[in-house]
View 1 (tube, rainbow, N blue to C red):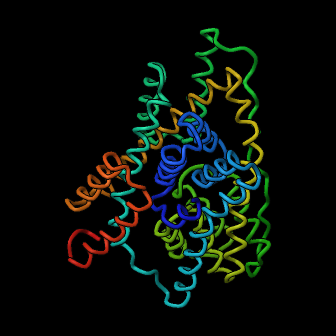
View 2 (cartoon, rainbow, N blue to C red):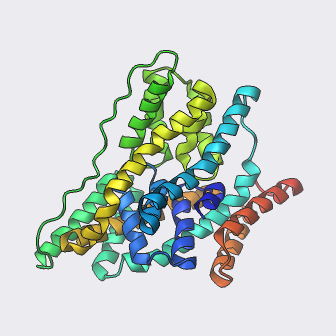
Length: 368
């Protein structure tokens, strides 16, 4: 399942989360909505790629360490291979393939999938009047560009304070073990593989936020400090992460290929994703204990509400960038109808969106 999602999940973390919700909650019933929300809240509190960490958490829930490895690797590998091919083509032809028309058809479908997922998760997360008010406040703050981590911890802290004030807690909140690993990067000369690994391991172990935050970290290390990439190459690397399905963090694969060939691609990919496996392995066994402790349960309720607020704001931005003309609006509405009325598998809808983008491009219709 995660191999298929890794090969078809376009649209960034919010879209990936929605597709996983469709598969593991609605279709396979591996997790309840409440458990899925707890995992989503947990991955927002640790560094690294959120959707990849959610896949790893789901693997842990199903088959512990074996499931953790299989789910995570399966979700990463398709995007890694595609990014590697882009790296080869970039070095050979000095340009990226033009795939705008495919994304033109896929993005409206992804928007519909995300909207449906939020609609299904919101009643579970905001299950009281207090949490609904908190959710609204979090949406306003997220739209005002408040720091994501501050919003998550702030919402959790408010819920804990309210629970204590109402006398609904006993004991103390467990101290979070999810602190960033202190990984050094080392100086590089000629881009040796060991230095390449440590640079990306450091980024993967301290980075919170979206692919745009990743851009800032990569620029600081690879362009300004080490001088391994030019500004133009870095922008192309981020574009590859957006063009390919699966984790945006596979921009590291493309960069690794540019700097050190296939070996560099593997090393950079391993470096940026390895911390995610470590963090989930450390935090996964503690989640049931967190939910059973009243104060920790209140904290998770706040984090879950804030996580959905962030998804709502990201989706609104995606809508503004996606619904650019009548054909894109029609595609989004048709996808939403197919999801709600016919309960079609989201993966097939993504494939259908890509085919629609190609067809509209061939007919000279739309912005693709």
